[in-house]
Length: 427
Image (cartoon, rainbow, N blue to C red):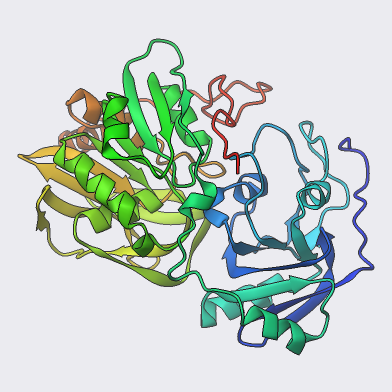
């Protein structure tokens, strides 16, 4: 499909959405016809739906787009964050009939149908979102086959919830993949794939890091076999309370003294490895406009999020752990949820994690300095964050940021010539 062709979805096929508390919404079919079930969550991003849909962290979730107009840029073959769409279903208010973007090769509806993703359109997504904000994320069903609300509700109530769900094995790579460093190789990183997004190893690769993406079943011996300079745990779906094997692996990594960096699920597992608990948020953080404060520099970053669980760690004090001194480094300004952790040993930073997505695909680039910080930690020098704090104390101007991609390059701002699909899930 070219960007000038109209979308072929049939708005005459009725569809229904039913929440586990019995509330229902009627609309029309969007994407594949049929029936689907999952956890109803909403995402506040006004753009980046392709990256959202292909993010493995959304596995078994039905995503409601709060932006009313979805699909206007169509679908391209460059921005996928994995090899497939992972959402269980998609809910939109007003799907674009004509995609308009020079990179578009087909419509969003075409892609949903080709991958068998059931969706619903012409739904009052504002009312649906307000309902979830008041009542919390819950199980949901979408159907073009069972149009009686009570009959579909009975099916919804048979579905498992997200608490206690171990989904990592569904999304991880089946075997190790290597993403080569761009230019001179400076470091080797063992990245545990818990649902990794393609932009993450791409961000590392352009910093001279050779990334060995290991399956979630990797052992400490597997990690050490890579001879890594650092270890990374990725984002991913499900309840972190179920990931005991990965927590044990991370504790082994910390015992071995390897520098650690974690994102999202990797932040939650870092918290568990340090002795903290995790809990389920009422409706989670999902979108590309979440304000987070760095508690050391007091700098506020606008960040991309996708998480329904959080770390239960004290904000008012440091915690002594078997691996060093742990502190909460970042908090969400909307609700004070823990958004980052640091681990120091002998006054040296030896591990850190953030709950949000600094690879920002899609999203703002406020936090991509964290990849530079990982590099500095592996070098054993002052981290960018510490250097920023020193400059703020001395009232020095910040160092210049990287220049954005040139106009017409076809790359998102700040990207080098590296495919974001360098690592994909093959399930």
